[in-house]
Length: 114
Length: 103
Length: 239
Image (cartoon, rainbow over all chains, first blue to last red; front, side, top):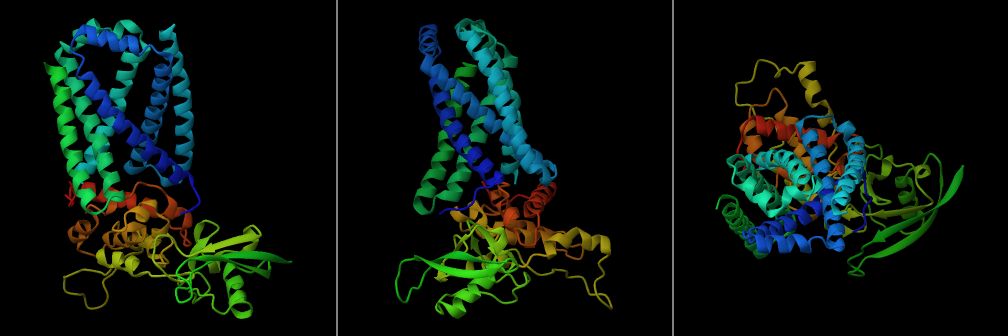
């Protein structure tokens, strides 16, 4: 069904999709980490994670986390009583902050690689 | 009501926890996530508490969200199955997580 | 300042054909006329089988809510001059269609019944009416203006997926009585809205606010309901 997208509905869709991705990642994350109690396996995984493709994957994941965090802050603020008339500007400011924090974060990410 | 409120509270905990988690594990350089450094931290009780709270918050928050998605999009028998699955899976994951943090 | 508009209307005539089709009509309308005027012209001069609901034609009865260019609106409140030359009209989303633009609103009104849409006060009535101060009335003034056209509930993505969700309209009605100082059934009302498909399913999407022809900030009211429910520490039927 086609229906016009609004700021609020787009924010909801992105929040929901990122939420599902993060939940699925959480399952894998906990499961994999729980099998790393010896240094050999741990260092093997760390060496594997040096792969540039996986670094890009980590950066995408970082962006998803940030987007979900800032969208979540917006929803929580609304629920705590911040006026709904700011809901659109909050969404835009949130998206901007996601971008800024992501760029800063990516800088540190790569500084660590080289 | 309480389940919903807890979802919001764990959300706030996760924001703080993730800040810590990301800075420590990704931005501060390799020394912070070498095997020795991680094991050193895991032996301290304050880190144990942080990790346990972080783990349970993440699991609750994530699976409450998935539960909501199932409530809205799935009907009938698959709904019952998935809802049960979404209770068992986080318990199993909590078991895995607690095992690595505490033992 | 008359201009030709193309009305693309989604037709469903179950007696003729079990599937839907799009019909196009060219209508000449002046800049002061509304989508409803176009529909009436089509019905009177081009195709008498075109079916839609209308009554007051002045944004009070809420009969002519429909999806116009991808968004729910009242046909009687939408001026054609504000729309592009091609106007796409469909029935309200997510409700069963009876014919053309007429949808079965039973499900919608049933939700309304679930929130007990009447004053509950067991105390013996005073000699005259139960007094409500202007300040007290102000608390529920915005929610009282609802005309129950169904635009909000059928614009809500949660309702599209979860037909059991109470929806913005019924929750607004719940607000109207929960915040009425003459009402006494707070616990009963909170119980009615805090179930699995109640107020917690609202994700502050604001689609309802975008479409409300009475410009009610419905999400604001639902957020207040959530805060009230938390304040009362009321346990719903949820996990």
